[in-house]
Length: 263
Length: 320
Image: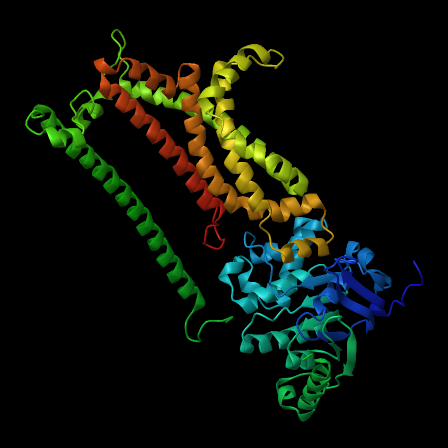
């Protein structure tokens, strides 16, 4: 192991590459020398066309997939070690709730794996239900909830053990537009309440600009970072989506994406 | 989304929904009972109808030679009247013994049910163990699955006596005395483990890639993933298998008794009444009906357990 990253950095990628089926005829270069650093408490969106490797990059950060070359640090540790230390929580496009567990028991799943006592678990799950404003639904089963509510349960589950980082893979991709905007506001509120660092994969430009302090634009295969756009819109609110600066940033991201589009 | 319309008390609405659901459940139960009864009556009518026509052919065979050859003639010995079968339940089949046939059949059914139960439980243990083993590695799955499938093509009638003989000679080392009915349980196991292994494996493999990644993201161990994700996810698949396996364990026990001659159960009863068919065909029919009821009862028990175990889950059943 070479030098580690400073601890004020939540996630850092150093010349990270990912090649699937290396050396075989069906070899795919998914990511090529990615350099990226996400500061503690930051909110970073990864955006790019389908197949640009943004989800793969997220899985590299999660330590679910090893990097072929380069290094990934999470809280100053190798990504796999951070995974073992449960430094991050993860949310996916499908809420991936276990349909045989009630909402409360879904939220308590990671706590069970960590060996928490029943009392500690029910105390924490009540707090989390409160955080995502689903206190009346603890005894419901996932299939009794709407898609937006399921995603909120998934976020509560990801944050239940208070990880310092939240990794999200298109979590609102399957929701309708109105629910999606509502969920974005919810996520920002939770982010501010919990001081968690967030890495958010999306293919929606307005979503990236509305949520993130930084939008990372990626090119299609092999995935590279082609633009790193700071978004300084201040605290988001109802007015943000009508703010001219919001549209300027959307245009900036769109142009960065257009520049890398392959015919 | 979160709250209901203003002005409507959510608790009132929920209570109303619960009441509606309860009524719908009751209607569903009533419907099932009515359909089942109608089916039994239809079968009885079909039987009696055929019998009426077939018997008149028997009487007038010389007059209707063509129909007589297409539609086999019948008589009270081949097809005893349903009323006679039903009243036979109340008759003692043995002289010097007041026990009615119904009691005989009931006791024999309990005996067979015990054999089947132990075979069923052992089959679940064996089937699940095989499923977990095959889950562990593709190579094991590829190596083992053909044998699991082939095992079911070997005729049960051929292996049943072998298992009974093994039981008599090879199980002396066991801490308890080996009874002949335990061999019949092994035969039931032989039929039971198969659906459990095949469906169990399918169920254990059913969680989505994201669910597996979720468990990995918590650094969950293999055992934790098995217990918290794969096993609960396989429960609907297992119940589909258990319904097959429960009936199969009864069939296995009956066939085991018949082909090995182990006494005390409904299979042996069927064998005995079949050998004395000409002096009382109703008894054979009655004991076969008893075996059928036993099969329906165990199927029903599993269905009730399934309903309880799968409460709250999405309604659709997995396709097997």
